[in-house]
Image (tube, rainbow, N blue to C red; front, side, top):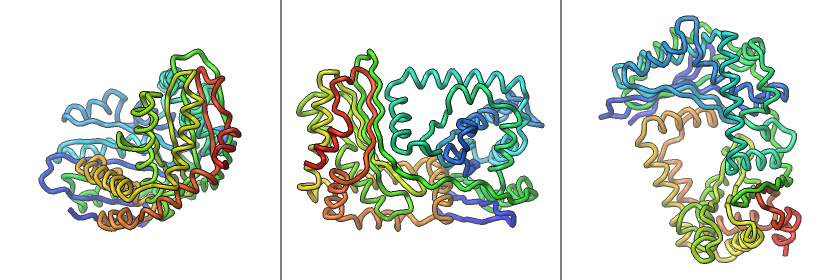
Amino acid sequence: MTVRQDQLKNGFRIVSEHMPGLQSAAIGIWVTAGGRHERIEQNGIAHFLEHMAFKGTERRSALQIAEAIEDVGGYINAYTSREVTAYYARVLKDDVALAMDVIGDIVLNPVFDPREIEVERGVILQEIGQAYDTPDDVIFDWLQEQSYHDQPLGRTILGPTERVSAFSREDLSGFVAEHYGPDQMILSAAGAVEHDQLMKMAEEMFGHLQPRTGLIAEPARFTGGEARQEKELEQAHFALALESPGYRDDAIYTAQIYSTALGGGMSSRLFQEVRESRGLCYTIFAQTGAYADTGTTTIYAGTSADQVAELATITIDEMKRAAEDMTTEEVARARAQMKAGMLMGLESPSNRAERLARLVQIWGRVPSLEDTVARIDAVSTEDVRVFAEQMAVNAPAALALYGPVSGAPTLAELQERRAA
């Protein structure tokens, strides 16, 4: 399998990987415009725009967009994150040109029909309402807000209802004008694809576009803070975030191995101590996520009202203990989990296409799998222990609590326990 990468004169980037033996392909456009690129009055518009892309173009109605892909047995979808918006499809190899035509059409030629805007506004408002009714969804929005308070990176991707209720056709087209330039787009494909064919199609569809200067995302500042909302629920939801490296920092591999060993699986410390030994919860996990210039290690659990205080203090204690006695065997197991998860995931052309796009967005190139594996293998037990101490004692923190949480410790009390 060979990765090929090119760029048109206007800055539009193309990256692909042919996977021999596959009869299908994944193809998509990744736009480096997400939630953190919105001004405060635009909060939620990147996600609204993603929805509207499927609501009709100059050449196709909303139904024709869906039928074009589903008539050949494929599927098409999109998502918005805090740093990118992606439009992608999975089709059989003979239908790659069709998928490219449809995706290019919805990205370049949305009509923003006022009637469809109103219909989709209602859909998104229902989506927001559903999120608020899902405690283990909304708590992460609150945690993000406390981690990056009063910054674009801390705002919800869906946006607040009052802004979504007010977005106009001009607002949508204005965001496109600001952020959908050719130099902000990446065409990524994997599977039964031919790079030269992709290049030709990209030149025909996107080669005429003029480069534009998008707004630079505001640098992230991890502020920390606490959000606590008492509500009559069956469970108390607990989420703790700690400032971690961004994805351009070599320490990201250490952070990911640490969170895997701490709470990444059934053999992890938190799972064994909090769930298996004490029976305090059904779900508990730790994970590390990253952005261009910052990251967070997050711990989440749901428990009963009378056990949330015990769960919180044991979590801090386990973090501190990891700094003292993290074993070589635990680090080796976490490394193996990371590598296996990455390599197994890359057997899917959809996952591989996404990886290519993200690496080009991050680095401007695609590092080899061998290089990534070597960086994971280079993390030592001592590296993880040093990082664990930073997480346990010094890293800035944010806390979110939701449900019957009156008995839960405050962030200040948890900080005192960290320092003890």
